[in-house]
Amino acid sequence: MLARLSIRNLAIIEQLEVEFAGGFEVLSGETGAGKSAIVQSLALLLETRVGAGAIRSGADSGEVEAEFRLAPADPLRQRLQELELDAGQELLLRRVLNRSGRSRALVNGRTVPAALLVELARELVAVSGQHEHVRLIDEDTHLLLLDEFAGLGAERTRLAAAVARLRQAEGELQRHRQLAEQSEQRREFLKYSLRRIREVDPRPGEMEQLGQLRERLRHREKIAAGLSSALGLLQEAEPCVQDLLGQAEAALRPLAGLEPALASVHRGLGQLAEEAADLARELTDQLEGIESPVRSLEEVENRLDQLRSLARAHGGELPSVLEAAANLEEELAELQGAEQDRGLLERKVQELTGDARRQAEELSARRRRAAGRLAGLLEQNLRALAMSHARVDIAVDSGQHLQPTGCDQVRLLLSANPDHPPQPLARVASGGELSRVLLAIKTVLSTSDPVSCYVFDEVDAGIGGQVAAEVGRQLQAVGSHHQVICITHLAPIAACASTHYRVSKGTRRGRTVVRIARLDHEQRIRELARMLSGRRTSNRALEHARELLRQSC
Figure (cartoon, rainbow, N blue to C red):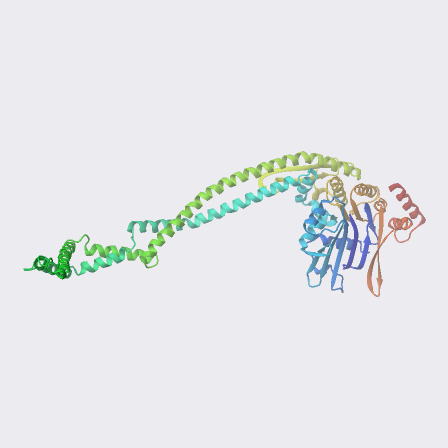
């Protein structure tokens, strides 16, 4: 419950502190006394973005601090322990605003992100004012109300996660498709480049070898003449080198045994003769190659042109062509792998779509079952609030478009008259009827709502008399298991409260001062009488006030 609220330099409030008792509590006072300013200050804890406009005129900063008392088993305590913010059964939420537009959020004295402060505050308190009427007309709110009533929070969370996974997979698939469209030309270029490289089929060192061959073919006659001349001297001249070496070796052969020193010379001549024979054979082979080449000069030039053209397309050197071929094959394999990935993604999207739609259909079925129960309870509460002919219909319409909340559109339809069918609230509900519908919803949801504190600002808009008394009794009923803080101008509502506070406004040294006081029994009677009759309180009004208290307690 909200145990204490402290406000400094916000709206028209300079300094104000109030301790709450729990149950059903009301704030009353003259119009403009500052009642709504108190609620608006508390609401600053529920808003992520807060402007400097909330700061009191003439002040550089303002702040609001709310002290909540937590039950020992409150699950919020576990959350605070995980955040290392636990302080036992007390929880202090504080918001400090500055003229610069910057604000500070504090939990139990420690600075935290504003989003965390808001998250914690919204688990503890819900503020309903005139803007709630606007939200009530908004049909997006009706879906949330039905799900809260049916206890579908876990199912909504699972469906939202399933749809998020589906949207992520769809995004990946769309990116793959876009890349596939963009890479089609790239894929064709890769295939063409690889095909050209494979057709040319370059080999390491081939350009150097062809360069040498080209030089040989260009100087073919000169090389052939030289080879022929050398070959003639080795084995064809009279006498030739081979013959002379043979004769020299034969002359030393008989002397090698007589003179040991000549043996090595004899062996050397034999080796020279063998080497001369080998050289003659090699010259013969070279001469045959020159005279009958495997490739013509034109063929070699054409091949070199092919290789040079390929090299220019891939970096200017033949080694870069061979490296490019490996890179092209790798990139092409990746693109082809992406095609396979796309197929996997398409199957994944189909599976996720099926899973999400199954969950959405199950959620829709549970909503339809709960819609009738909720409509019946709302009718019951509205009839107790002097809308005796109220008829409520919760329409659940399913479509094909899958959203994180499912495929359903939920509309709360109301008829306040017996001869009119239920229609959207915006068409048929007056301000007073909207207030009663809102209260009926809060009453129905109060037993399952984890929020411990309801704050109502202007819940009595557009009502009075017996309806006001019934509103008070309903708020009193909600206050039996929730803390209810209500701003009201109506004595029948205020009389039902367990605690009554009066808000007043005055001046001090030319500055507005807002005060709040908890009323004792006699003060409460006088305040109720004022609410009944205005500024001048008559004995009749006092007696009426006493009677209201007797009837309400």
